[in-house]
Image (cartoon, rainbow, N blue to C red):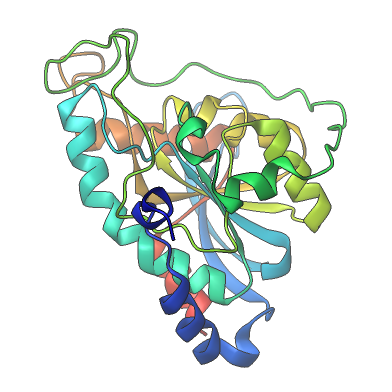
Length: 275
């Protein structure tokens, strides 16, 4: 194993153990509790929190890890990614054991992964042309992020410091690596995948707007589910609506629940996968 391959953090041994333990659970439908929001009286602006249960076929599901980079130009954002990443690893391992496809999408770092089989596997796929995009209203966000949203005072500037995905998130042998929406869509079509669990950063930017993320995949007919406690926003409390960083993130999550897709807690997803 060369140095770069080793540094990616391949989880081969732990995956094999987990898969063996899962045994007959692989491929079995699991049920997840989802949260969404409904404007019962249209135009009233009164949104109600709604909870529902959804059965998921793991053979038709994937996890996308969005832009969990090794470094970030905003110190606060980098610190929160470092805290979040170790929480993702056990969930991803359980997802793999149930037969769910895992896709690593650290944008603008594909050069780091060019020699890895997980990247080559994605590039080898036959491209699928998406059907016409569904038109969906896209209301403005409830926070002001025009200046980048950094809560620790740094200002965005190139060259950006990220070079790869943070090493705390292992890449297993059967995973895929891509930051291209058409590549990922082609994989989903080839595998018959219709449901995407999306985690990573940032809710108000990449998680919504990347070519592989919530808006585009929803418009292409995929059912997205945001893992709401494994995400973060680029929001500075000194900007509108002048709430704490965590409250700003929650406001963006609720915006997504209103207009784009439901959400799930990682603990609920992990428990569902363990049954």
